Amino acid sequence: MNNLESVIWLGGPPGAGKTTVARLLARRHGLRRYHADAHTWHHRDRAIAAGHPGALRFEELPVPDRWSAPIEDRLAMSLHHERGPMIRDDLRALPAAPLTIAEGTPLTPTTVGDGRGLWLIPTPELRRARLDARDLRPGAKELYLRLGDEITAEVRRTGAETLVVDGTLTPQEVAAEVEERFADLLAHGPVATSRSERRHLLRYANRAVVDQYTAFFNRPWAQGLGTLSDAVVPFSCECAQDHCDEQVPLAVADFPAPPDATSPPLLSPTHTPGED
Image (cartoon, rainbow, N blue to C red; front, top):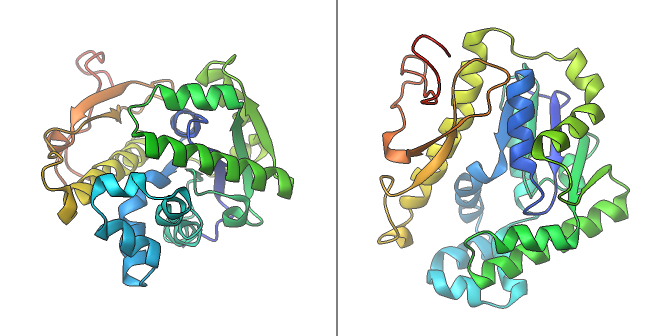
């Protein structure tokens, strides 16, 4: 059981680069990576079971109507504030070792509480440019911009620790800055060191993505929106090398089947035979 003292929290608006930084640091240091987006549908099911009006309305509305609803309704349906306690529950259920780096938009100062958190705050120009580069519905883009404004305002109001990103640094350089902020925690660990431990952590993060897409396509309203075979996403190479940041594009349906303890690792094609 995790008392959350072994959690490194990384928050920020959509488009801040949280996922990339967390992936780099998890690989480099042998950390468990918790990606809040991968638990979206599990959290929504919890909110539905609790009778949350926003969660129920989201499921009932036709997909186009969700994104044309008034912005306040879209914000309520996003469950941005409600997901914080659920994330804490998820993290408490994880082993205390190794350290977990948790990242996601719902990680607000309220969610983190007394934990060690850092918020990546993109400049307005960078945030808009990154959202423009995504294939988003106009209503989704407007919601993400609004969420970014709310997160930035809360972070500044509470005096939480921030790192402003303006696009002048590479993801690796931003990761190095974050690494420096958490140097004491990373030095004391515990972190995964063996090949089997590192592979287990990489599979944990990849399996969460598989579960995310599986849960999406199992929603009744998702019929006709595609299948697991249509969804091609980048998975982390499951080699044990701490310097590898290879991403393996793969249809979710083709991901190695469980049980994860015995299925073969997903490796980048760039690895030579016998090398992982």
